[in-house]
Length: 309
Image (tube, rainbow, N blue to C red; front, side, top):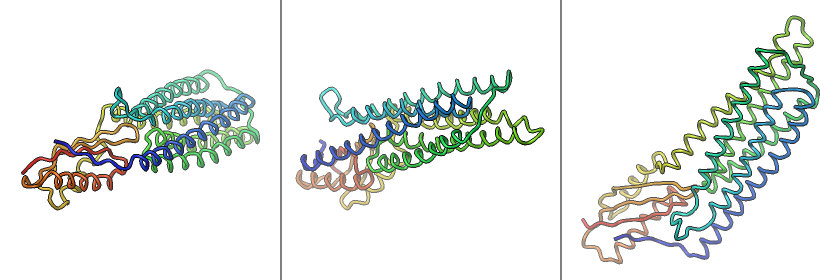
């Protein structure tokens, strides 16, 4: 037999609604920020001919697409569980992260191809001016603010989609810095004699940006695949066993199964209790066990299977 402990529906519904609204606002602000950065970078990149800035524009373009996908994923994942989806719709967040990963990898292929072509075949005239630096500095400022906000909301509500966006946008800071270094080198090549090789720094900076994006994509890809394959959060099963077996009256905790679906974590476990316990006492023990697990994972959905000793 299995016992479950349910909180007050009104309090739970209010908390869930507030969390969903907060997550949607965070995703919406990310969309608006990405939209502004894409417009600026494309304009300045085309005006100056900088592949580094255009690479960043493409990167920000994917940020925009990913932010839009994340926004809708957060909304869909908030739909309550139903008869066809008894575990809820949290996997939509994981699917959006997988989609974002594929977009990033496709962009990397284009950036590396174009940069390599410029390095091998011909030299492209690049005009470096104050707008080149200004757009990248603005990009860094916006990305710092955006990544911090997304990370804070993701941590507060255990949202994998927002956490993936936060990690993704934090790398934009470093890639933008790399582009600025490339622009500085191009400027120096026009001033210092015998330093024409510095003119290719812009293309090299674009390749570095692509490498950074590949690294982020691989991390996101691994996490996404693990979530879709129902891999247990690392170390959580062991922490659950330790916490439950510390509870007086629990003889043993075993057959612990943990899976994540978006922001929701599902925990299924068996406990060995005194066989002389009444049904009321056993039910009370399941409530205590569930409370102890929620101290580890506040958003956990726990099912306890008591077994008589």
